[in-house]
Every structure is written in structure tokens, then in C-alpha cells.
Length: 383
Image (cartoon, rainbow, N blue to C red; front, top):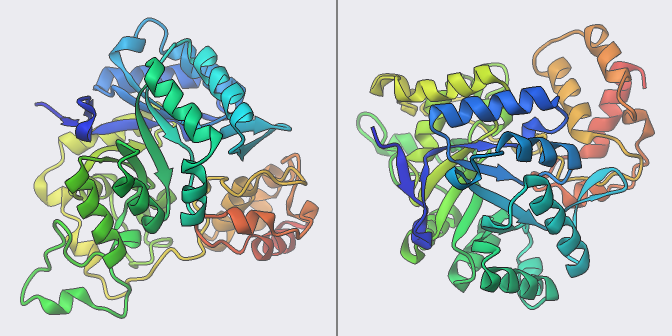
């Protein structure tokens, strides 16, 4: 069975299930090697490496030794490592140093799709395309260091402007039903006599409809992030639908959206790789996501942390995503705070170190009230 798709107008074909390497950060090199090896064994030939942390870049480079030409890479320009933390940077010289570091650590002299990293505000996009860093991106493409240019964004308005500009070939974008579908008060299923049709663009928010149509019209491929909504869709307790989706259902939803070429799934163990590839042995009934979407308890993920750490850097060096994970385990999953406390307190900085500067809230693409959550974490775990 051919599970590959064309990556829009790039002329590149990739397996529709790809490896998003974000959650390999902080893991031992042996685990990184094992996960990458199993993914390649299963047919993965496409990886996203946005992380700026040096070790994970090096470990992935080692894991790809001898097979670089068999895989395609998404590498990001603007994702930097500064003062021991991930940060987003637009200054050309800083971006150049960190991108050179990526090439060196991955032991490659080219990146298949070079992504302008994490641009959400439409004003920032307009400023970026006139900047020296955009000129640097164009220079890299002219030199053949980048084979294509992409953009990662969480904002459909910004993404649409980029797609219509003709300057990008690939868009990395968050795709799942909780982001796509119309708000709960607009009961889209009431328009159907029998089973709702969620294929194509049916029931999707207008701004996202426009984006999907533009991607199709311009030959811009979408590579999907957040297909599982950071796991919120996978349990009844966390899902705003009041019902859990399975991994095959989430994958099927994303892969059935217009212009989608691949899902960058954050597989962080060999077991998760195997679970993801069970998609290909699942029946059509097992892939069917409509029964979950019909639940009357439909809600949103507004204000929920997606654990992406795009809120960093933190002046107090708090790993905000980790603190939020422990808080959600306590508040959403019912794990007693005492059970989590030892692990939580082992973090180099905890919620008690929060300076209430709110810089993180300005950066968060998901509207998380970080300082409020830090206060709740401090109350739950003692500091």
C-alpha cells in the first residue's frame, strides 16, 4: 500500500504519517535512536525538528547517520537556544548561528523544507517579509541549502496571508476538530437529517475554510501539528466532547482535511510509534470520528496549555509546560497532588518562582492564563 502524498507544489513525496520530534527533547540518546529507528522501519520518511536544545539535535543527527538521503527534514529558522532555554528570535545573525548549528548537529548540508518559525501575528508576518532574516531565507534557498520554504503558525489569518503571498510552499498548522469546527452554540449536526457530514470543509470555522481553500488553490501543503490536541482528545476526562477519540480517529480527521500532506505526530516511545501505525490496520468503522463529534457536550480548548513551551523564555527559568502537565494531571485526571509532589519539586524551578511578568502570556498561541495557573500549581504542590 502506498501511504505517501505529494507535498504540495514542492515535488516531494512523503509518508502521510511523519515524526514530530518535539517530545524527544530531554530523552536519553538511546531512546531517541530507538524511536527514530522504529519510525523509519515503519515507513516514516519525514521528520520535523524545530527544537533548539543542542542535545536532541545531536541525538537525531546520530539516529539519521547513514540514511539522511532517505528522509526529508523540516528545519526551523528562528528557533534558538539562549541562556539555556528555547526562544523565538527574528534577528538575522542569531537565526543564522542557530540554523548553522542545526545543520552541523544533524550532520547535513541541506534541509528539505526550511520553516520560518512560529509566526502568529499578521503584523509580525508583514514585518518579517521585509526583514534581513527573510533575505537570509531567500539566500539559503538560492544556494540550495533549503529546497523549499515553509511557515509554522497557529493563526489562520496570518497563515492565509503567507499562503496568498506566494512566499511559502508548506504550512505547518494545528489541525484537529476542536480547532476546526464551529463553536458549540452553532449545532452543525442539526442541519442534517441523519449522520452529519464532516468531510471536506463542512462545519468548519470560516477563517479556517478560507485557509484550507487557499492552500489547495496555491498548491501549498499542510503538515499537521497538534492532531491529538496534546492528548486532550484521547480521554473522556480531558476531552471537551465528553467522549474520547482514538489515535486512528484523530489521524483520520487530520488526513481528511483539504491540502493536508502529512501529520507530524509526536511519538516519544517505540510503543507510541506502533500505536500510531495501527492506523493502517484499523477498520473504516474504527477510524470513523463522527460519533465522537456528535456529542452534545462539545466544547473548546480555549485557554488550555498544549505543552509546546512557545511561551518561553521565562526569566525565572520555569519549564512552564512541565508545571502545567503536573497541574493538569492533578486537576483533570484526579491524580492526588501528594503523588506528584516529589516529581514536581524536582523541577529546577517551580511555580513559586513565577515573577508574574506575564511575558509568557503575550507569547502563548493558545491564550493560556499562565500566571493564574502558576498560582494554582503553587497552591496544589506547596511551592
